[in-house]
Length: 233
Image (tube, rainbow, N blue to C red; front, side):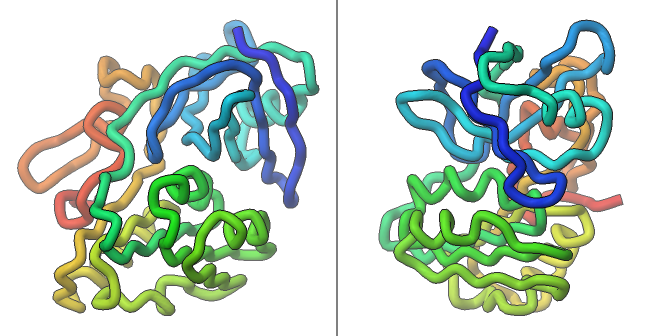
């Protein structure tokens, strides 16, 4: 069992939780998290927001019974962490120009990615209120572009980057795929899916993803896919 160090609301219904201990995990990977016994049945998949010698952090949105229980945790409370799972974000040469695009809580895995992509440009889109922008600005030597209430993707020049990584709601990821096709950009464009998951190891098929060659599993084969591989249904 892990022990909660911090669990604070950083914006309405957006929480930042840190658990004490020593954890592994690459950028873009996730943990299955729970702080209850039998109900809800499923653990919640939370991407790694940050990790250091003191513990691991997650950024999550209050959206149902599971996250409601997580939001009630206080320092000293226990929770269960299993992971890390998933394939994570790609490693790229240091000289490549990288853009990270996050829609809402899709920004969560992008912060930890800045440990690797320290000069990336970051595009953050929020529907109502921006959060943690100063932390992103401090973590990158690139630009941080914020859009509230609009479509942040409109500000991304797909031909200006070697690698583009996007995480957010499915509608945004579909738009990323269209932009890649329409711009004929040579960039490698990746999408990190937010599919519902049950086991985290690919055994239950709950997180099945339709791809151009076959169905894959978001937890084991993903959650990061090349944009052109995914068939959005």
